[in-house]
Image (cartoon, protein in one colour):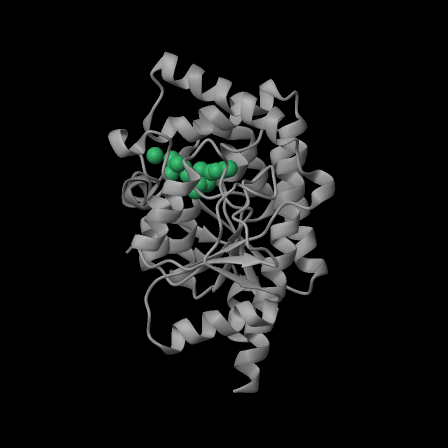
Length: 308
Ligand code: PSU
Ligand code: MN
């Protein structure tokens, strides 16, 4: 029978040997950044993970196989295909798999793959959430429901203000997802360190975060955890500048009637154009920053396991 799931040998061996593994999503490659910066960033992310003594596991669907641990060639392919690759969230996975297609996994799709493979920690840029006006449109990302039911920790730089950040935090609270600020009390807004909203908990180091993950696991709780890590000050953008451009992008999406799974990629692309690439540079740097923290958390988790 055809297998729809595959874990690379390197990732499998690391997991079996209690070596730290950090998962990475692929929608950020295909739909989140332009080519060739998307491929360069994804490969640099893998290099950073290795320099930190961890094993990278980039996740995507390749010819219908949900693959944990993509090769550099596969990353290149996804980056070149860009938005013509299907964006794969939970609901898309069985169809893209059965049709034998390529797909780029979102935060939700990547979390699912992590759970199947036994990976605890996953790094990305920003998560999906409750879009502005979602009290009417119901456009709330499946990422939030996945965090509620899948025991994987996602490290991100908060949520872009293309979303309603306050509503996103309310949705996470309802779903029982802890939002942990890394060395901060403020919910970051991706390009800026603060959104004006507070996080539930502030933890100071990777060991404390690993201990919280372990406690959640030992209590037999099913959901995940969101760690929010502010963009480093030197790369953060001016709040008024980025907010004005986000407002323009949203106005254009509304005028064009763009919705559903196209909305987030449309807004990301529009913002990148409107800011003449400034937002892209910030985006790349905050991903690197999240990846380093995810490596530290994964390493601490392995230390806790080996101390048992
Ligand atoms: N937000 C970003 N960058 C991204 C995404 C969201 O700032 O690349 C991607 C992630 O893969 C996320 C997905 O899981 O978009 C959410 O899409 P939607 O809102 O359609 O659920
Ligand atoms: Mn949506």
